[in-house]
Image (tube, rainbow, N blue to C red; front, side):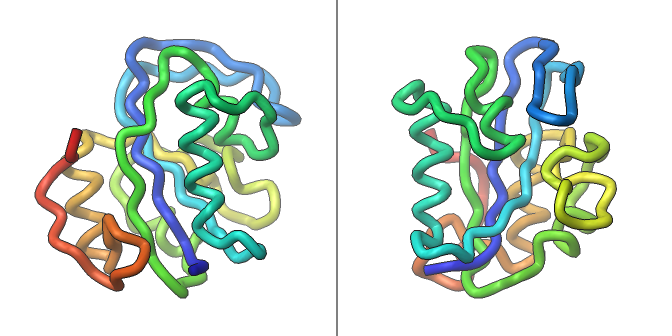
Amino acid sequence: MTGTYVLVIDLERATTLEVGALGSIEFEAGVYAYVGTAFGPGGFARVDRHAELARGDRETRHWHIDYLLGCSEASLERAVFFPGEDSECALARTLPGERVPGFGASDCDCLGHLLESPSVEVLLEAAQDAGGSLDPDEPTSDVTGPER
């Protein structure tokens, strides 16, 4: 299955990372939302790849988000799926939070596809309101908070 997804990331403490061509970026501790698309041959398997990197089971970094997921201070909390939707830029503009300039948006005119968000709960509620699901095989789902 293909579509757009949102990764919900908790950054335990502030850190500075070298992020590919973007260079050095300072991240505050908190919750971040990354909006991406998975329209290649593997579809939402891209989210599994991101999760492997976040767990330390993979080292190779291809996308901006891989630099953040690969740091020891970050944990991937949840993924929200938008099956069949090609709405990466529109979704990044509607989710709550401050954009990280240029992050994840090297192939479009958006300010950025990474947002520093108020909380996991606020982010999940906004993603649900936008039509997201916690299960990539279901078009919608009740999102009441993070499962751990």
